[in-house]
Each structure stands twice: as structure tokens, then as C-alpha cells.
Length: 277
Image (cartoon, rainbow, N blue to C red; front, top):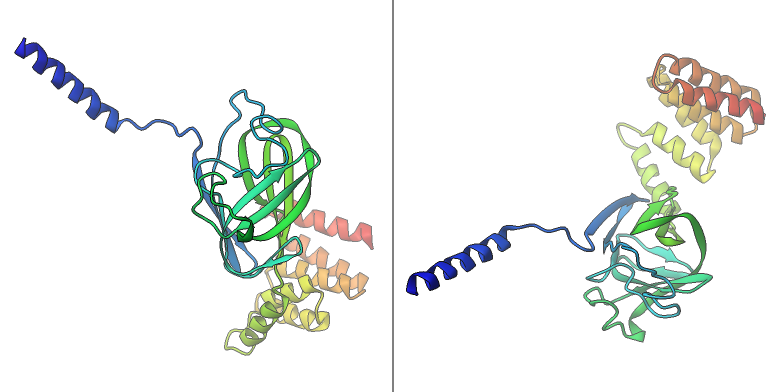
């Protein structure tokens, strides 16, 4: 009997040890995204539940109620510069991100509490930003919940949610124009002026285009075989209304790109510019 008890004990101990070593798939795996944006970055941390045959919105996730917007720990967004969230300006920091799903629109909310489990502990006075967004119906079912950053420009980025047959997105903005122009002005006074980046920023902001043209011409003089610079010059010339010169620069970009992996891209740029002008 003692031997039997000892054998059973050893077997149980072995099974327990084995269980401690096994790695099982997480029901709602967590992820972290660090997205470069503007002059800094946005960090997103969230868990990704899947449908697994369930009906979510209007059923498992009721309409008109605050939803944790993911699973497990609080979904968080961290900003390193001020962000415009709808009509609200959000200071740099880390915030809990929750939503209120409805049939025709969602409400995107940021909260001071980043340690909540689900929506527990989200007091009304803790909300720092709110924005209502329309929803879009997806043609195909999105099995696993997804948050992503899309359509990034120098000063805007879309925060996009997709799950089941729903997509909801909010356009985030930052007022970085003056900050970037000040930084460029300082760098242009240095020993190695960033002529091409300065030209591109001025082009993006539609700012002092004659100076932008001068910058890109200086960059081309330093590196005449850089075909992509001729395309930047073509875009500036187009905005300045110098149509024939713009086409000539676009052609130089295309000719310079021949034989490279970018040939078809710059051919498209050239033909597209000719068709517009």
C-alpha cells in the first residue's frame, strides 16, 4: 500500500511539473505596436479576442455600453506629443482606450485609468477625450479583433478598429507644422544642411515653394544621379505653376530610374503628371 501511495504521489508530481512547462495558446493574445508618427511615436498595447462562432456587437457586446475594446488588461495608447482627438487636445501621456459601440456610430474615449480590468474603475471624471465616429460595414468577416494605424501623413493618422463585420476609425491629428519648420531652420544653418528633407517638408506644407525649389536644386547639384530628387523638383514646379519645367523634371526622374526596381513607379509618376498638365 505504501508503495502504491508513493507511486501515485510521484505520478501526480510529474504531471504537475509537466503542466508547469507546457505553453498553451492564449485565448486573446496580447500585442504591442510602436508606430512612428509626426516627430515622435504612438504606442498601442492591447489583447486580441476572436469571434469563435460568437455574435459580438449587439449581443456579447451590448450597444450603448462602454466596452474595454479588446480583452484582459486595459487597452492603452501612449502619445509623446499633443494629439487632437476629435475636438479635444490630449497632452502627452498614457491613457486607457475604451469605446461605446452603437448600431450606426461608435464613441472613442480616452481615460486616465490605465490599470482597469475591463471597465471597472472608469469613473466619469476620469475621461479626458471623446469622439463619435461613423461605422463602416465590412464585406468579409474579421475573425480576430484588430486595432491598426492607417493612412499616415506628416500630421495625421487614422486609428482603425475592425472586428466581426464592423470598421470604425478616428483621424488623429497633431499640430507639428511650426515645430518642424523651426527644426528645419536650425538644421539648415548647420555644416551639412538637409536640403532634400527641407524641400520635401516645404512641399508637404505648401510653404515657401521658391525656397523649396532652391533647396532641391542644391541637393541635385550635390548628387546629380539621384533620380528621386528630380521627382521632388517636379512636384514643387507643378505647385508653382511651372508646368513644362515640371514635366521635364519628371521625365529626368523616370529616365534616371530606368533599369532599377523603381522604373515602373517613376514611369507612372511621369505619365500621371503629363495627363494632369
